[in-house]
Each structure stands twice: as structure tokens, then as C-alpha cells.
Length: 439
Image (cartoon, rainbow, N blue to C red; front, side, top):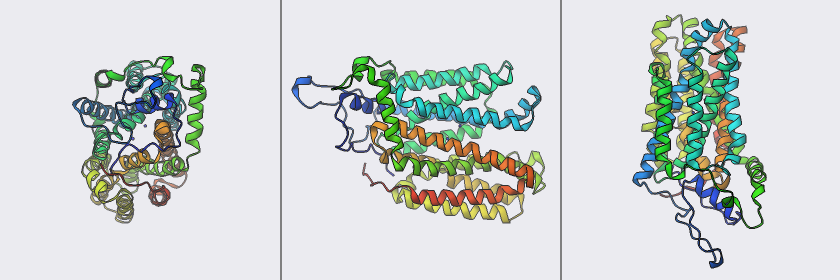
């Protein structure tokens, strides 16, 4: 498969004061804890989890690395559409088999959500990011030589698992830096740029190697396997790593905000991927446009999304996340009605570009809300679960649209999009409010 001032949430006093919990929190923020002598009293950390990470040269390099990983993820996700005609011809399969690839991609995100808490107890941030980049390289190595279809499908599972590891931990890291709303807008704009240029990126293996190299160099200070003694705390034996991981997952599942924010992402990604995946077929079949003339329409959607994530990050931050995102949803709803009711191909292309523009800030703003809503010790697990449910929406609704279109025609796209946008707006209203934090 892929969004205020985003500052590090203040750690509530009810959190356990165990050394393992603080270590995991600081590793998630990519900060090495420095402990005093155990007999000297309270611990002394090099970084206070109550403030944003300063924009040092090293942090800026990490931000650029995160941006490149999102760009590469966009080129991967955007390449599926152009690959479909070749898959159908090479493997001699019907279009129904494409759903298997979407299912494999979703399984990759689901695996990430289940294993995230466990990995945090064994690998530091840099090691997890490099693991994600290595999995993507493996996936792209499997594809070019024409493997059996089953192995080809597995490559999408491996790629999605790698993207999920990089996305969840990159989002967590970026949400802690000073001016995080701008940097979240930047990395998600890079994803949209990757979607835009994906048809022109033919060197996936070379890009994968660049991704690994950039991440390894930028996060070399946390590129390590964690020693067992780091996990040992007062009353917590070393053998309790997996038990602690499961406890983290259960604690995450008990947070209402996780499910409410997930519901927003579920419908949001459903709208975006359904519109991007079916708009060409709709214009060709219903509006009687020629296929060559409509090929640019998805590019307009992705180009608008790229600009929206760059240009709307600051207004959204200054004038309030909740208020501005609700305004964007209303604008998108109005544009969708124009797309439905005005049977003009040029107008449809322009409207979709503007829809992409106002869709732009949604993902980064959602991550911003989550970074302030979720406790630090479960934030990677919580964001991973949110992204999994988002991918579920991105897989379910395009497939559902295809099934219904097969029976009644592709014109069903329009009422489905209207319903999804309304559901997205309602789910955004239900997301819990979080206190604003000054930088």
C-alpha cells in the first residue's frame, strides 16, 4: 500500500516507570537513553520526551531519508496499475486474480501490525527501517525474471511488509521533530510524487538499493540489535519480551481513539484508491472518452495530491486541524458532485485534480492527530494498526466497486464515492479532540 503542530505527547504520570518502557519510548524517538547510576535516584535522559527533537544536521538527513523512502513506496504502489496488462498477458489470468494481489498487499500490512511491538524489543529504529528497505529490495529482485504467479503474488506481500515497517516508524520519528506538521506534509508529498512518476521509474532494484543505503547512513546511530539487558527492568525478566509485546498490543486495542482514527483512514483510503483505480474505466465507458486521452487523469489526481500536501500543511496547522480538514471534506464532497453531474471530460479531469489537491493533507493530518493522541510507548503499534485498517479500506472498496460494477455497470462508481466521502466526514467528527501544543 499511503495527514497542527505535531509535537511529542507529554508522557502521562500513570505510565510505568520501568527502564524497559522508557528505553523503548526513547528508541522510538531515535534517542539513546543515558542513565545515571541506579543507586543515585531518578534517571537522567539526554532528551526530554516533553519537547520536540531539534532540527540538527543529523535529524535533517534522517528526514530526507524518510522522504525518499516514502517516494519509493509511492513508486511501488503506483506501479500496480501499469503492471496489470502485462500480468494478464504473461500469466494468462483473468482480472479477478488481481484481487489476490491486493489481498497479499493487505496481508503484508497486517503482519507488520502484529509484529511491530515484538520487533521494538529486539531491534532499534535504524535496524527496523533497514529491514523494511531490504524486504522491498527482495520483492523487486523476485519480479523481473518472470517467476510463477504464486511467487509473483508473494513479492507484493514482501514489498508491503517492508513498506509498512518503514512507513510506521518513519511517521513516528517525523512526528517528534520540531515543526513536524511541515515535515509530515513533506514526506507524504514525496509519496504522492512517487505515485505521479511511477510509470516512468523502470529501475526498481537500483532504487531499492538507494533506499537501503540512504536509510543505513542516516540512521546508523540506531542500526543495531538490542542487547537483552536493555529490556530487563525492575520485576521484568529478560524472558518477558514477547509477553510485554503482547501487553502493548492489548493496551493499544483498548484505546477508543485508535479505532475511531482507523475508521477515518479506512474510508479515506477507500475514497482515494477507488477513485484513482476506476476513474479511467468510468470515463471510457460512461463518458465515452478515448483511452489515450484519459490516461493523464490519474496523474492529475496524484499531482494535485502532491501539491496539496506541500501547500496546505501550513494553513491546516495554523487554522486548526479539525476545522480545516472538515472544510476540505466539504470541498471534496462538492467537487465529487460536480464530477458526477457535469458530463464533460475536461471538467472531470480538472475536478479530479482539485479533489487530489484538497485530499492532500488528510493523511499527514491524521498522523499528526495520532501522534498526540496515542501514548508514546504504544505509538508505533497504534499507528501500525491504523495503517492496516486504512489498507483494508483501500483494498475492500475498490474490489467491492468492481464486483458491483460487474453486475450493474461502472456508473455505480459515483454513488459509492459520495457515500464514502460522507462516511469519511462523519468518522472525522468522531475522532477524539486532542489539546493543541505550541512548538
